[in-house]
Image (tube, rainbow, N blue to C red; front, top):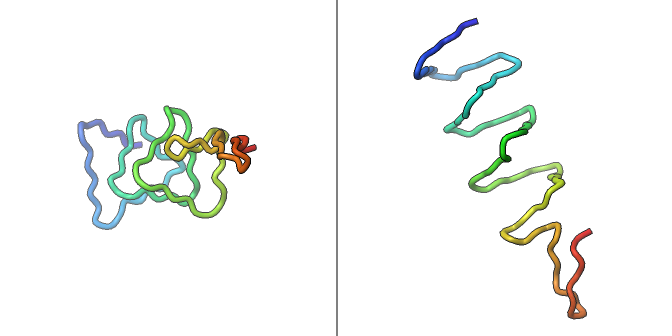
Length: 93
């Protein structure tokens, strides 16, 4: 085991830094200035949820939620349309 205690630790590698470990963890904020790629799935839990800025694209498979999906203020679970007989449709089943 190597333990380093310092104010700033900077590692500079010309090609890459390769870590072979079953687990890499931090007990504080992790910030990446570049793209984050993952090939083994992703799991996030705890905290106050997740937020994204910018476009989000999902390709292949399904997107499943037990909550609601909203576009602006329009709820997918509770939206209604004007019916062809002048009334309103029921919300989605």
